[in-house]
Length: 196
Image: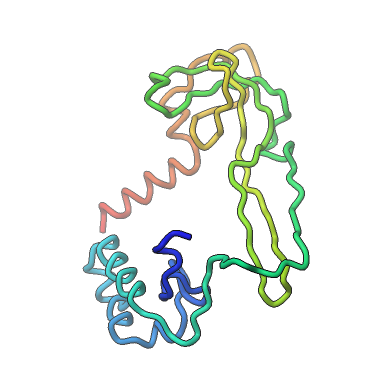
């Protein structure tokens, strides 16, 4: 196990961690000060988070329970979720798509591809020590086979869209990219941050 993950500290505790913090941690004056609204307003978010994480790496209490699996473990049952390869984004498997991969090696080129469904991109597990049940789950993302490249490109590493007519057989433009909901959200967040 990674040395940083095996260390007994608030950062690796199932009661604390990156986003959820236990009551014991919140009651510590040093931590409470870093979480105060005044500090949050004037402080650089990254700098403040780094200070919190450094503090959490140095603290451990009697209630510590490791958030990561520690072996050996007794497993009574393994549960896996059924992965639906054809559920993603209302597109039919085999649909013709235009795809513009984000990597520099693709030189901003748009390719023709085939949507082959949602494919697992990572597998993760969780263990319940009270029931001794290990759950194995998968996260998926749209997978597109690009014949010219002879490879699968995932949706999260590209701009893509289904081709519904011959007219749409054109390059994905900057307007296509800027009209995606999460890009609009990022632009809005940046404008809000600059305005405050």
